Amino acid sequence: METCWDSEGIRRRPALRENLIADAAVIGAGLAGLLTAYELQRRGLNVIVLEADRIMSGVSGRTTAKITAQHGLIYSKLYDKVGETAARRYAASNLSAVEKFKRIIDKEKIECAFETVPSYLYATHDRRSLEHEAEAMRKIGVITDVVEETSLPFKTVGALRLDGQAQFDPMKFARAISDKLTIYEKSKVIDIEANRVICENGKVRADNIVMATNYPIINFPGFYFMRQHRERAYVEAIEGVTKLDGIYYGFDGGHSFRNAENAVLVTGEVHRTGDRALKNAEKLRRDVRIDFPCGSVRCTWSTQDCMTHDGIPFIGRYSIHSPNLFVITGFNKWGMTSSMLASEIIADMICDRANDFENLYTPQRLHTVGTKALLADVGQSVKGLGEGLFSKKERKCTHLGCRLKFNEEEQTWDCPCHGSRFKKDGRLINGPAVRDLKK
Image (cartoon, rainbow, N blue to C red; front, side):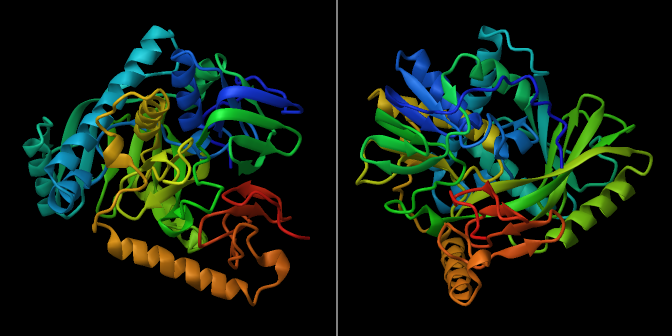
């Protein structure tokens, strides 16, 4: 399934076939890795980026590329369960990320179809939660309004409007940023030892290492496989329909929408990886036909997101035992702004500068919000590992051994524990696994 983003303009890079030394090594050439490497290099560090496949070939290349600080009902959740300070910092960090995209695009003169638009959080029936979110945002100083009418092709009970957000073409942006960086493609990282990153045909010795692989590929220390899970969603690009006046996200069963050239991208029918793929993909197709009866489908694709137990990304030191190893993961569907703010936080930590947002996103944080989700993730891992004990070797995930589920919609083998995915013939598509299935 091909996306509407054209990756052909991103030039190919050689594979790593020697041993190198750098100030920093960034693992993963998705948007988080590219932006972190760009920021570190801007500050004078010698940076090497290692990519298992091609630049933007992972989740970043399948994004709908909405740049917004409006992330569902996050502010009411943080305000009520973590505190006002956390909600304020979350808003400030994401609004700052939106503005930094604008600055970089202007500074580097990047042609990437960047457009400033309003962002709408809409409800199909739950008006009360929408107003509660609006109240929380006003309390932390974010200017927003509840509007009654939208440009969506169906009725809503209201929408929360946030001005000054944006959308862009992620591939064109990545092409411009990657042209300034030293990147090795087809250089799969198979291990990290102290300050050495070990690939299949070479090594990089670096003072600092940043894991930006969407889902961390190192299990211990960190235990990220117990604190987050993967969810899949489906996207259809619809042509021949009326353009929308902004970007939209429905929190109570609605879909996500944005314009992309002469099409509207519709995203939705989220499910945990390894569960209900065919059913959900078919439902999105039915809903699109109802909402846009005169439209035609240009292309369809699927995407995958890391969901943390508390709804806040993990950005910071990998663990207390690894001071020079950093991690960026758990974007909870909001990878554009999270990638940008992560690049700033990680660069400040490596350069020993104070950052007001470091404590909010630290992977070592402790609070009770999300305990139920954490226990559910642990339970799912235990269940999958237990089933894996009685599975054939060729149907066990090469990450930790969970039993794989066959995805009829995409003809892949998917891990319901941690989201690794394999082609029907066993070749690896998505980590945290780093090896193909056994034949």
